[in-house]
Structures are given as structure tokens and as C-alpha cells.
Length: 72
Image 1 (cartoon, rainbow, N blue to C red):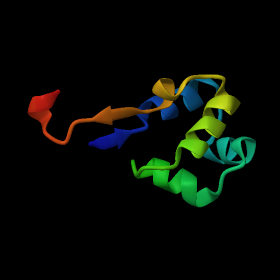
Image 2: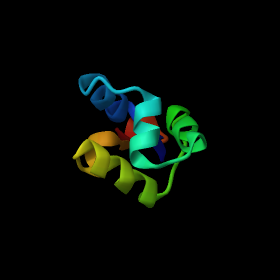
Image 3: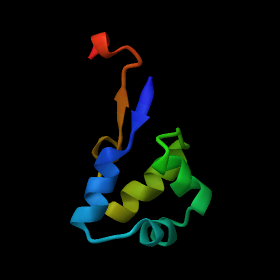
Image 4: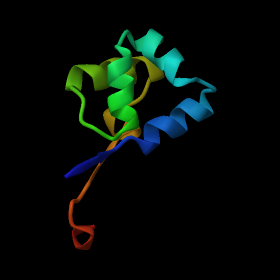
């Protein structure tokens, strides 16, 4: 399964935050933000930190996408 963080980027736009703001507020490294930008997996700890900063649930920032479009 692939991971999509499109929901996260929409939340940042709504909150008028930049990726750099999220990085500093959540206390994560820039490499984590890069992984998120590329749609790569990150640890649950990172997702929890992001959700705490944005006051949301994990499902609000990411979604799992099936590898096979027919499964959707």
C-alpha cells in the first residue's frame, strides 16, 4: 500500500502554515518533512507529534492507498 499525505498539506494551507513551521512546531527533522513530501512512510511517533501540533487525528493527515487501482 502507498501512503498519501495530501490531507496534511491541505491542513497546513488552511492553517496558513509552511512546512518549516510544522517542522519546528512538531520538533521533527527536515528529513522527516522531506519524506512526507515524497509520500514515504514515517514513524507513528512522527505522526503523533504532527497531530498534536495540528490538533487532529492521524486519519486527518494521511491515508493509505491501494497499490492496485482496482482495489479502490
